[in-house]
Amino acid sequence: MKKIFIINAGQSFATSGGLFNNTITETTQQFFNQSEDIIIQTTTIENGYTAEEEVNKFVWADVIIYHTPVWWFQVPFNFKKYIDEVFTAGGNNGIFRNDGRSSSNPDINYGTGGMLQGKKYMLTTTWNAPATAFTLPGEFFDQKSVDEGSFFGFHKMNAFTGMTPLKSYHFYDVIKNANIVEHMKAYSQHLEETFSDSLITETKN
Image (tube, rainbow, N blue to C red; front, side, top):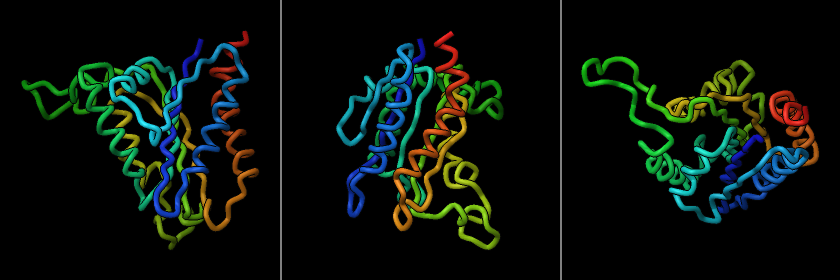
């Protein structure tokens, strides 16, 4: 039995209604609902949460899936608050024990005190920027990908807990050139490629 924890960080603010991330979350749920051997828990941050209950979900899950829009090259403020509250509540309580260092040699082993070893996570993000802003010479992101650039710290946060990454998926150009049908088709293919062998196929055998 595999356990999936989906976090929907879509947020209503200014011109954003959070609807695109709701659709991504629904697509993810539908994909995993194909198998009776997969259990899903979902948190929609905007609907409210209890930090201690969220810690329990991280401890419970085999895979954590983050769905977040990108606002000013960072996660929305509700999601940042969620991270601060939940990860702090998980200190020495399931998410991390300490920073991994010892007082006898404090210069080494930073970031090795996580308690979520063996778990995996997957990140999805939604961008107004087109994919070419990350790939073409002379364009805005200097040919650095989302994962090695804007979200490098996010990945390090998860590494600090002991989790390891699955391949991320990033939705580009979702404001000026959105095609939800095509976006969800491509994303569903990513889910199939990422999870079928390790989760759905495995549970059917």
